[in-house]
Image (tube, rainbow, N blue to C red; front, side, top):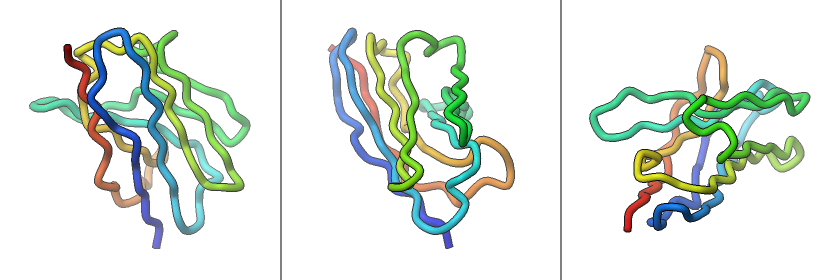
Length: 114
């Protein structure tokens, strides 16, 4: 059974940077993977994705500020975030980009506030 564990979330000031990571146990990491986020009262949204060939896509709201990367040997997915804004505050999750999704992990909280 696949398990996902996200880590690295923190409280950061506006304009700051943060790197979050997830590790995926089990098989299937070879698919396209993505970082999602869910802010209070809002639906979960996909903000960045990466294919097995390292092709990346970003939501307009994070383009130019976030960078997604993967290590297929370690089965890890990273998200480097810079120029953080208060509206980036959310719980961040990693998962497959396409269905069927894995069971969700617990996520990691990113709070951007002065």
